[in-house]
Length: 68
Image (cartoon, rainbow, N blue to C red; front, side, top):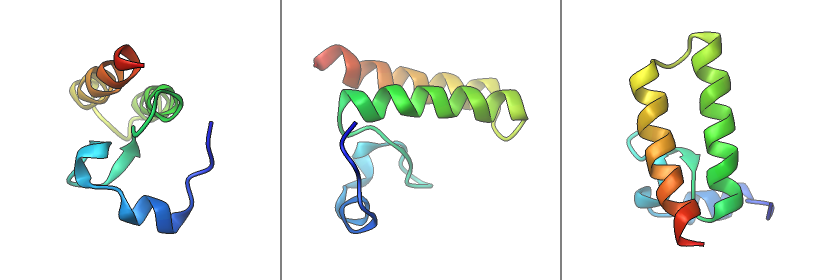
């Protein structure tokens, strides 16, 4: 996975995040999308996000993975 610096992350449009309002879970490429799915799963298991939020993140990440 390519390293995403803080400056590069700040430059990404909101549409490149699975949760654009929070600018969380960047999904600009397939590697980051797969990572977002893994982190969302961990957050769900830890009780930090709901099953619905995890599903929304997975759906957006899957769309990016399918394109590549």
